[in-house]
Each structure stands twice: as structure tokens, then as C-alpha cells.
Length: 519
Image (tube, helix red, strand yellow):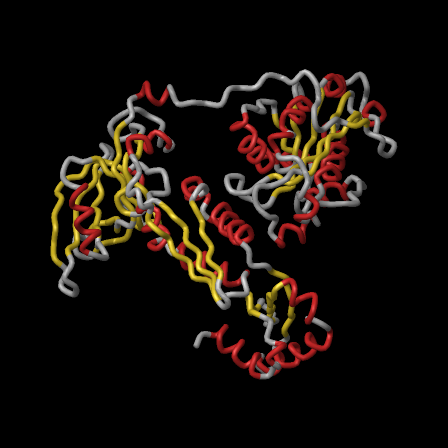
């Protein structure tokens, strides 16, 4: 009996039959020793039976079950068991945690069979994706998530597509080209033509850069040589050793299949002279006294000619919109503004140059810190002309996944706030028009520009404006303990009434930027 089962067994033992409507969602302990315990229950039971008396009873029992002198914070969450909700949970998890894999499984058929005490979920995937789900541990993690969100016990199964392997000649054309900087045998662009063992998830590295050091997970590609098969002593299965050479260097690769089927599949596709992309950890091998890669995933590759790379389809660059469509700028009607000509000598060259330039100071609120995985949820900007703020631009943005609770704690933006907000694709053209011909300014600009470019360039909008980082500007002109936005604002006697909200941060940064530019 695991810890969750033990906990619920003793809790339910002290509850009446009609009170046993709770399911343990999570039980975690923070650094101070305080336990956070979350229960889920069906929405109907939540409204009908979860009253103060039951909450008090549950709290008393939980305190009895806790280790001595340990506090517990208990929360309750409504849930429903429906195909739409289950599908949403699966897609949301894969989008957030497995973004590379998500593109290949987003259109998978999901069937849900509901019984009294359990829910059976079948997800139909290509055979190699089914293998990857199990071999990578994704199946277990996804099952654990679903069990924490649905009252019934969850049984998740990945079903191989009845049509068998996809037509890889067609499938290969949908896969991204893996490009490197120089064209030679060792750095030619590769295209994966067929996955063999699970699904390779990362772009291959140059072997010469990785073959003499350990790595937790690394992909390399090259030509197979010295391919040999050996028998294991502990189990009646073979293992394989070979070298992979991309022209820069070679690396030893070892593969230990888990079944005869995997061994037969591997030998059918892999041998001396074939072009292979492999992925796995690199460790020191005591038998060969060399660094060796243990193969977890493998795929056949083909070399792509230089001309093919040049023909890669790039989204057409959009023209400057003629007018605003969804989000219109508003005149700035804030407090009395600082006049740069009263601060600095109006005849100075620096003041004159600054007055002639237009700036857009902007800030983005996002669902996380990784631009490749997270989304913009709010954009705010302030336009500066002649050293004065003249216009503002603001909008919530609807993300493609839910906002994590930790993010909401920082910026107070909830999923309800963005539920009916426009998508970034409906806002980017207006923001492009608002910023066109200006110099962009942001505090820690690399962060905001990474999100802006990552979400805009696939839509054809390229923000090629000059960029100024107000954080770096402050570092060059001030001697402070740190250069966080609020710290620099306080130095100038400025105040931001709503920190971590896009428009308020943008306006505050604009005022600070005007002062910094005159120093």
C-alpha cells in the first residue's frame, strides 16, 4: 500500500459512507514542514455535501494522521469526468511538458470509456510513438496527473494505429530540417526519414563537441561502422556495439534492446554504412575505456542537399498594416510628465538627439520563463515622442494552455481574465503597427524580445527594431544593490502601483528610461 492509499484508507475509515466523496489529489511538504493537502470531488457532491461540518471533520482526522507537530493546509477542488475535460488535461500536459512531442500527437484519436469506479482512456498513436510514451515514462506521468484530477481510477492505454507505420516518405516531409552552421559531411543538414526505436526528440550535436565528456541526454548523427552483436550473460538477449562518425569525430554507441522484437527491428534497419541519428546519455565505459552513448532512441536519416535547405518554406513577411483592427492605442492621460528640457540643457546634443527619436517601452506577462514553451498573456506598451509619453497600448492575450498558479500569484492574472481575450495572432498586427519605426525598450529586454519574436515570426511579423535594455542602461549609469525594476524606480522617486502588470510596468519603465537617458 503506497502512501496515498494508506492515507485515504485511514481517512475513509473514520468517515461515514455518505461522507466518502473525497479523493486525494496531492500531498506535499514545504521546507518549513507544512503539508499541503488537496482533495478533489465531483462538482455535484461539492455543492451538495461539502459543508463546514464535513470540512472540520476531515481536518481533525488529517491532523491525527500527520506526523507529530506537523501542520497541514487543506484545500478542495471541484472536478468533472467528461471526455472534453480529459482531452483538455492530456493536451495541456503534453503542450507544457513535451512540446516537441505534442506536435506529433495533437491530432491523436482519444476514446474515453466511463464505468462506475474507473475510466479507461485509449489514445491511438503511430507504433513508434506508443513505444516512446512507455519508454520515456510519459505514460506513467500522464496517468498520475489524470488520477490527481479525476475522481475515478484512471487506466491509460496507448493503442498502435491499425494502419501500422505511417508512410514515411510522406511523413519525412513534415519533419523539421536539422541545420548546422557549415556545409560538410560532419555538419550537413539531416532529415529524419524513419524512427526506429522510440522517437528522437533533440537536434543532433557535432560529435567532436560531445564525445569526450559526459552528458545526461544527447543526440548525434553520422555513419555507422564496426557494427557488432554480442549476447548478454544475464538474459537471453543480444546487445549491439558500433561506432558513429560524422566527419568531425566518432563515438562508441551501445544498445541494449528490451525484447527480441526490438532486437529484430534494430538489426533490420541498422548496419555498417547506414546514416543514423541516436539519442541517449553519454557516460564513461569501463570496458572500452572510452566515453560511450547508451542508445535510448534511434532514427534513420538522409542528407539534405544545400539547395533543399534554401527551399525551406519560411512564413511570408507581412506588410505594415494600414490601420488598427482589434487593439487601438489610447492617448496617455497619466500624471504630469517630466519635461526633459527642464532636466537637461535643451541645447545639448544628447537632449536634441533624444527628442528626435520615437521609442516604444513595452512589457509582456507570460505563463512562464521559457519562450519556446510558454505563452504571452498580457502586453502593455507606452510610446515616447519628444521625451514625453503620448500613447499606450494594452491587451490581455489568450494563451494556448492554462496559467500556472505560481504565475497567478506573481501577476494576479487568472485563467478567467484571459478566457475571452484575443489570441496573439489577432493582436500582433496592431502591436507591429504601434511599434513600427521606433526603438523598442524593455527592462531585461532579452526576455521580452525572445517571447515577442518566438510568437510573432511564425505569423510573418518580424520585429527588427533597434532594442535598448533599460536594465543594462541602469547598470551603466547607477550604483545600486540590484537593478530590478522597482529598485531603479525607487532610486528616482518613482512608484509603480501595480507591479508585474504589463501596462503599469511599461509606463513606469518609460518614465525611468527618460531620466536615465539624460544622465
